[in-house]
Length: 75
Image (cartoon, rainbow, N blue to C red; front, side, top):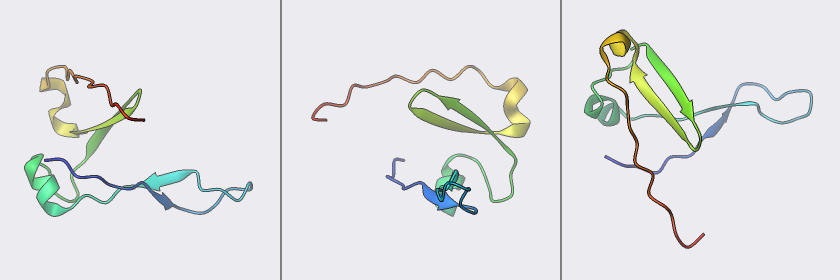
């Protein structure tokens, strides 16, 4: 499942007048497809050009995640 989402500003603005936090809304069907439900604890992995969300209680048993990067043309 792939859906394009927008990172929405979150929280209060800093002294510089800019937001420094963002959130993304995940629909219940997206959570179900990932084996998650609202209220689950998750780990957030941040990599170059990507964010990966994993269920927290499964962390020790998870195998490494390998993500194939496909070049985007036309930029």
